[in-house]
Image (cartoon, rainbow, N blue to C red; front, top):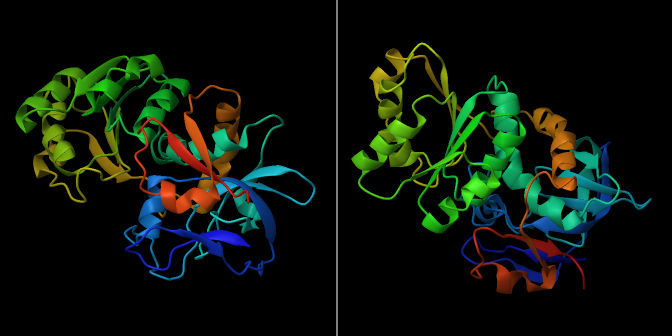
Length: 321
């Protein structure tokens, strides 16, 4: 079969012939891959930097996709935890990690949106006791996952969604996606923290794609301005775009009902992720979430791997010859 193959963590995947993998588990089958998204998680998989990396080469990247079963049924699936991912003409699927697509669903839209949408959806549905009417701050709302998180927070019933980010153009596009307020993260750290404290002190949940200094400097200002510090504030750490570590002041944990938790592989079981897939697929397929996908033949993988693409777009590869 043809596949995108990584033979060095220092170079992009290359389109070449590769031996077709064989299903060997009780619930595994081989499917034709219809579409697979080039997510940031795929890039970190391909360069060996993701915390789940096993540093095994050669590697076929791709962590999820849409496949076609022998009977023609389209399914969304999460790839097994092996070195053989979804950037190939065929992929092994564990049926326990797959969900049938509703009739009429666009495979490219599903492949583009599921991964960036899943982080905030699973965080709100599995990691915190989110209730309709609560208020949410999204740190890093101008990234692809952050923009999706704005939409998902509103869709799930948040009464107020505050988007915070650095990209000014994308920041000002967030109200059209459902943000009730926006906060610029450009400026001196103290000024930014003060703006966040003023705008978001009454939120119930923070969805954090940044971590690092932005998180570190914002925690205390948010807590100090709360009208009732005994009302829980849940800080959900999902991404670390701004840095892998953040110093959490001890006073933040003692002076308020404040919890910091993570959401990701390991924090949520595979079964937990799969249980959320049908509802999320329905939301995407029914047009409740805005998706900006651009598709390319998988044969162009090396050309498109580092090509300049708008952060508002999600690249999807279609394994056609």
